[in-house]
Length: 367
Image (cartoon, rainbow, N blue to C red):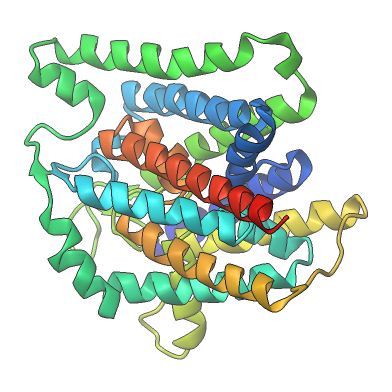
């Protein structure tokens, strides 16, 4: 196929996949902030198991694509030799705090927009603006000159199989062991309890995990050109990063705003990430309207407004610094078994839990 035709195919497939992802999120109430909140406030692990199941399925599916040569996970943005440990920790904690204040992470913001939540539209705009400032603006200077200076160089890559190989294990054995122990272990642990086996839990966990696997296939296989006819170089069609991408919802929101603001600039194009943003909103809206759950919702107080503004800004900053959000790093990045993604996942959970406990302490103090 010609590059232009390939790009159109990738964009339509990305939109369709994200449409399904948005509908699943709306149907099952898949929410990473809610997962942490349920544990902190009610000791309920139901939605956390849904998130962990999605990670396990994504690891197993992505590994299958990688092992059969359909994609090369080493060409993702996550398996880099540059291990920016401070960025993962600071970005993850900041994002976790922000998603509590903003009533949900990046993907949940898009799902809420589809269901008529006007607060989430404000979150979307602020998150996108701050994310852009962190990528290319004033906050980007701080990110590059301060946070990213704290880094280690791991020549073999920062993914778990590469680290096991560096420790002396055979590459194929290291890959198989990491996939089975981490991916298989998470999946088995989530499915072990029969009370978890509800339709929504399985749909949310398995469906979300498979959506990430499908995103890798679309971007890393269908959109892959070994030699672009214009540049004569390897290329991944229609991605902002120039590398294969899966689902992530911080930078794509910034690129969506950029496209709207610079629409007349012919160099700005619809990309894989932007298509997924539009798809999630559309899928969520379709399911909300179909089931009668679409309703308008706005801010209830000045404090509510301030919390969402601050939370959106923290998510925009933290998501870019950590190179992803609860889906971008927490599932897509995790599926590559990158150590940085695992650290970011833990940091997001820690930041969200700390903020939830602070809110509870503040509420009890006022009472």
